[in-house]
Length: 87
Image (cartoon, rainbow, N blue to C red; front, side):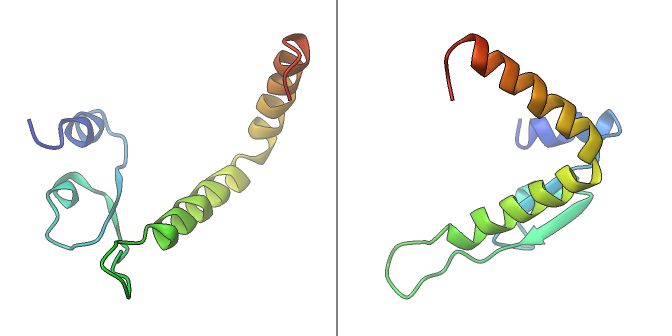
C-alpha cells in the first residue's frame, strides 16, 4: 500500500516527480525525477521554507511552459470569481 498514488501514476505513464529529504526515501521508488531537499535547521524544528520555494519554482516553470493554456484558465477563473463576488 506504500506509495500507491505514485505507483498508479507510474503505471499509467505519468512521470512522477518526488520531493524528499533522502535518496533512500520510499517515494523515490516510483519517481522519474527525484528532487532532494533538506529540511534541517539550526533549531530543533524542521524548516520547510526551502521545500516550498522549490515547489513554487517547479510550478512556475511548468506554468511558463503552458503559458497560453494557463492564461485561458486564469481568465475563466476571473469570470467565475466575478460571478460569485469573490476576489
